[in-house]
Length: 215
Image (cartoon, rainbow, N blue to C red; front, side, top):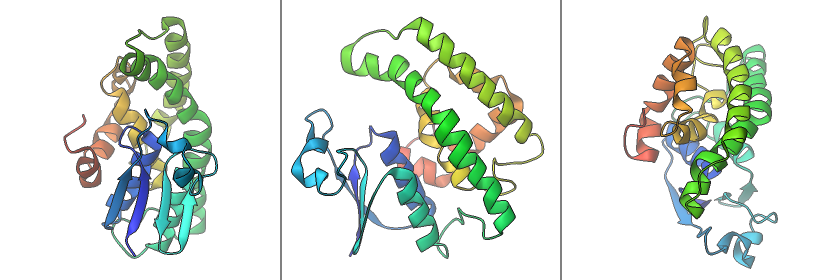
């Protein structure tokens, strides 16, 4: 049975899974969920994700939700295909885990979600301008996180070490979204971070998912 992803190209969580599948050179079917119509709250999606969110994922008899859990499954299940996204060395894997479970999901992503709402979603959905006070506050928080990344990337090409991993991949959708906003300058002002961003956004899987160069 083909891999199925129930989601939307407007969802950064869905894009995270699509990037992972593309890095693994896996065939899949994207079943579009109409967020504006509230389809993610309908019974056929709730049966796949009881929280009424996307993406939902099917691979034969395996049914999952939550983009990071799905991506870890893909990386482990198809470890011998495409890009190796999880290091098999326990010490190196632990370092990768720090950056995708602590830095990205607990520090980076919450900031980016707020910035995306203020700078992108308000304009797209309601034609409204973002709250500048919130944007400035979140920008300062982002700068603190990126200062840590700048130091980390001084001696490492990627967050997890020498090779691209889930630790980097998880950042891509939100970074890509921010490249059309004033937040791009926050990344550009840090040479090591900027080089990392250019690298991860130019990967073939990224170009395949987004269709056009994103940096």
